[in-house]
Length: 304
Image 1: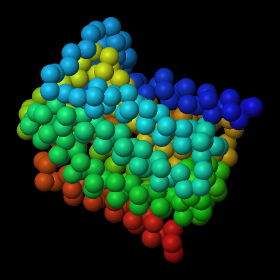
Image 2: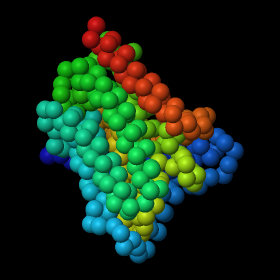
Image 3: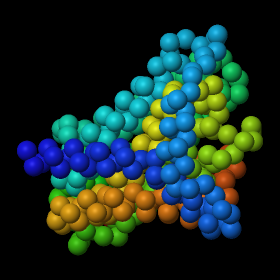
Image 4: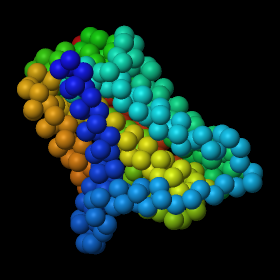
C-alpha cells in the first residue's frame, strides 16, 4: 500500500509541476537577457484562460483533428506511468517497457503531426515535415541512451534502469552515466521544441516547427495540447533526474530530488536558450548527432 501511495504521489507531483517547468525556463531566459519576462506561472494562467473559451473548427478538418489533443495527452500520461517517478518502481512496468516508453513518446508526436496535416494547410504541413525529420534523428539517439542505461542497470524495464540498480553503478561508471545524462538533455531540447532546435516564442513563418502545427487549435483543445507538451517535457526531465539522483536515498530525499530537479531542468533550459541562438535548419542534424555521440561514447565505456 505504501508503494502504491508513493508512486501515486510522485505522479501527481509531476502532473502539477509540469506547467511550471517551461515557465521557469522562460523566466530564466528573460532574466539572463535583461528583460522582465512573464511570471513562472504564466502557463497555468494561459491554460485556465483557454479552458473557459470556445472551440472553433475549420470546415476542412475531420475527427482526426478533434481527437488530437486528447490522444496526445493520454499517451504522455501512459508514458509517465512507465517511469519510476518515485525512484523505486513504476505503475505499469514490465520487462521491455523501455521500448513501449520510447514509442509512446513517438506516438504523441505522430498524432500531433496527423492533426496538423488534417487541416490541409501547407503552412502546417511544412512544420509537420520538419518535426518528423528531426524526430527521426532524435529517436536513434534516444534509443542509444536507453540502451546504455539498460546495460548499466542490467535491466530492460524503466523501473530497473532508473531504480536502485542504476544507483549502485555510479561508483564505477560515473563518466559514462554523466555522458548519457548530458545526451538525454540534448535530446530533451529537441523533443520539447526548445532552443537551439526550435523556439517556442518565434513568429517567423520560415522558422516555426512545433508552434505552427497547433495554429488551428483553439480554446480547451489548445489548452490540452499546451499542457501535454509541458507534461512531455517534465516526464523526459524526470528521466534525467532519476538518472542523476541515486535511488538508494530516503523517500523524502527522492521526492525532494524530483520536486527540485524538474525546476532545475527548467533553469538549465533557460540558460541554454539565453546563451545559444536558434540553429539554422541544416545545422540541427549535426546537433542531434552530437547528442547521439555522447550516448554512444557512454555506451562504449559501459561495454568495456
